[in-house]
Length: 115
Length: 113
Image 1 (tube, rainbow over the protein chains, first blue to last red):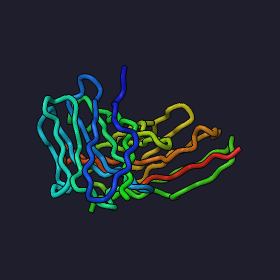
Image 2 (cartoon, rainbow over the protein chains, first blue to last red):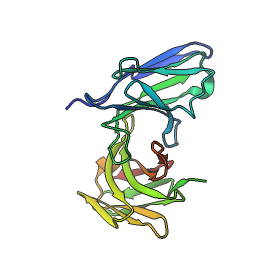
Image 3 (spheres, helix red, strand yellow):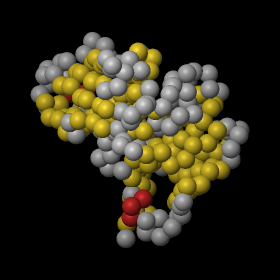
Image 4 (cartoon, chains in turn green, cyan):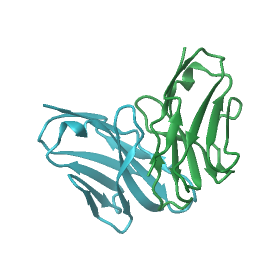
């Protein structure tokens, strides 16, 4: 079974530039999560989708971050404009369904460096 | 306030030795607790999951224990191997919300030959 795919794996941009990350979840997984993991910390949930609808985006900095999952499969996370403090690993995860008993499967992450 | 705290922050052990990582949480009511292993440059991978009614769960050389009364969990690694070097993250899910997971900051384990 293919895992969660993310691209790019690494990205270096200057502050105030824009960047987009892509995630392809495991086939058949209805729930998709985007996390931000700052070095030395645990992942922090940014946004959660159930199919193509947003379930929770309470911790997403909406003035600069946006995400979509238009067809309920792939998802993109965008930052515009980037700040130095956005330097982190952005993890995508998926699970079969919303309920807490279902396992979350994580992708390898995209490491963003903002200079 | 719902929190998950892990200790120690980092740990270095010799190959072949055992170690125990701790997770204390204040999340309540509680649904389940997971331990993840995160290798450098990779996403977290699930090791164990326990509901509030379970006391212990094993996965090979990894054994997780849970005391729901004291809100403590531990992850015991037996006969450590170099490949155990990673960050170990404790994640707690409350039972009164549909979506939220509370992540600890992780314990960074280094196994040296």
